[in-house]
Amino acid sequence: MNTTQSPTAPTTVDIDGPRYYDLREVASILKCSVRTVRRLLADGRLGYSQEKKGGVIRVSDADIAAYYEASRIGPAVVHRSHRKPARAAA
Image (cartoon, rainbow, N blue to C red):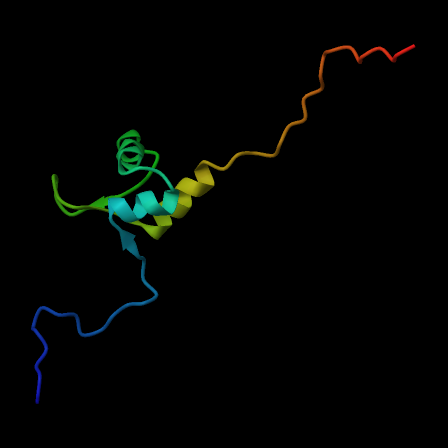
């Protein structure tokens, strides 16, 4: 049985190109809710792509990596206690 490829189907697949995720997948990757992802998008802390206003929102793996890099916590700072040490038992 011969099959023909649809004229709209891509002839090659770019495996090495950027990967795009929908909001549920991004929420799963970031381990948060979809609502939180929407807040990050609205605040501009997470980049995204959208073909037209009101269209589907897609987030690339590069945008997720940039968000992780920007939200990294710096080195731990050791705070010295201002409390006096306890007195030794006599």
